[in-house]
Length: 443
Image (tube, rainbow, N blue to C red; front, side):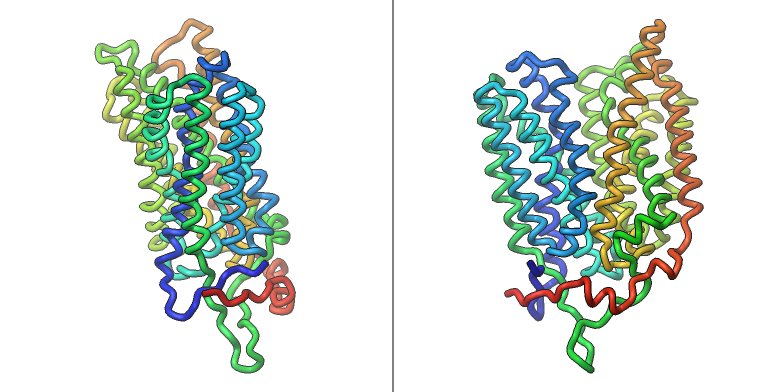
């Protein structure tokens, strides 16, 4: 299958909305917690059981992005967005059937496994295309799309809550809500499928074949054999671990931090804090990734990791003495969390070129799967142990904060060690011509 080529006069600014239609849809994953209380009540589940579809979905995101990245690069963005649409929407439809029949394993399989494949393929589907359309501003371009993944929950969370209020929070109401999600997202993601195009190839004057790509170009198979790939894997994993540690436990964390003070945090205020963190996550994806186009990718990761460590140190030092300091530091950390996701495709492009950057990005996202387990595990496990020891308030998280500082320091060192890729890993023009299919014209 050949990717659709833009006709003459096609505006490159139509491609970011195509990417956003997919990322805003799959970003619903961050709003899964809205369904947890209803599922626990209707199907008699524990908190751990109700989290399983989300956890499996994130694992499948990383795995499908890693193993499907080469297919996405070969078949193009329209194929990838179509696969994402089918899997993500089907996941909701299977979950609707599972809720209606009260078969929870079907919800886990549908949303977690099938839908998780849609998450991974959909997440990487527009990356290399955006970078090729915006070689002058790759950080901004990928930031616009990946901003949608962070912002999807801001739309899905109140929308899902309203549906549960209208349809009911029993099994039939949950099933109907899942059904509406699946059908609506199928329509919305179709916009991306129809809009997306790849740039027209530049022809050589001599034989009419596509001109070879300029600069450093490295294949996905060669990239994973370079130290640069694994250094960036460490950088992304450490940055995500630090951010997701706060994101996953945001509401109870701010409540615990100020529980023993004269001004405790209410449930509604904690929910507002979570909304602020989501907004910072989304804003960081476009703001910091665009900044990376101006100051460079290595420098922006120095900010993410270095300043992020300082923010954690500030929280640990100030403790429960200042709510504004706690909130501002947490917002900065979450903006770096989002910015790290949005900047890494451009960092990969700088190091490995545009040849198979989508496939390389997919393989790098296994760092996200690892961090998605590591971050919450560190924060929750230590907090549980401290609580068992009779501690409370901010002291529940002191050790976790120190560990996060250490992880960010490891990421900072890894970023400093990144160097240009050795010439032996570069793709030759002959290899490029053999591996890349000639796109077909598309209206």
